[in-house]
Image 1 (spheres, rainbow, N blue to C red):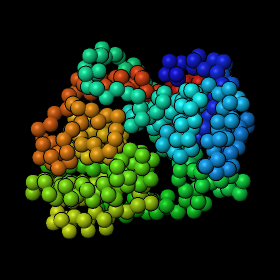
Image 2 (cartoon, helix red, strand yellow):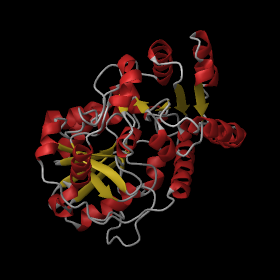
Image 3 (cartoon, rainbow, N blue to C red):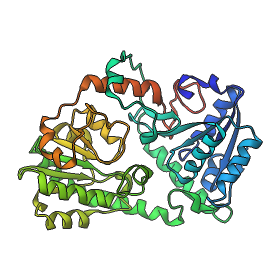
Length: 401
């Protein structure tokens, strides 16, 4: 839909559910209306209301009642298309089911598979639900196209942080009216506290991270890096059998202790957005000690990931898009969850136990990767940012089409 231009929405009745934090969906609605669409919006909390204050319907009931409400809403307004951000949120799982039942098209936004200059938009689903082909022969046979010139997006973090703070404030102020339990993450008014903890931890870990990073990089191609995901990432809950980061950490350490050679190192990298919520120090080192590998296991919070990927012997992920970065840096990759890029020739297809010794001999098919990357950009990526408009874009949403 959106990849091929806004004209596809002409004379369509489009329903917007939850978007990313900030004004992106409100701006997108202006573009859709300008293209001839009739746009509807449902708000689920005060944060949604703050960034889409005019022309939206408020839903205040329970998740159990939402399916019947949505079905009636879609029938009443003859909805052709439903757009939302992230297909694993409870509300959006209901929306996906309802859309299939009523033969309504869905379009799903997600953070960019290829960052920082792109966001993801796909028909039907994203990540492990993506319709992206997983057959390597599909990409080997395709004619690679020029990726084009994308506009650079510089430092959107201040905007993202501002929108997030305002979103949570809006949710708090209108918590008396909405059912904040519908949100996939806590909308507790004390959510500012983990951000303060995150800032404190960032500075407290800085010195030890620097010393550990220097020590590790003295052993290029002798260490494995494990980028952790946010503990309540919906991709983990939906697309990872164990369903949590803790079990992943334990499984990786146990396998490493059992199968890796004595000179190899294991480096866990904490997710920056999870720094204020989780600290896996005790779990990582107690598990490493109990399996006799504590001198070979490291836990870092801040590091230059591209440098570490360039020098790593291998990378292990659940299903984070960091996996794509590993492939881009020609770093052998093992995927432990369900991910659309877990394709033979791009990722190691043996077991985790086998990966420790066979990573050195695994070669990524870079021609396959370049074709795959080209396909992703053409079919699922938009040159845009949810939190900061591209100034040169003629669209209110800031998308460069």
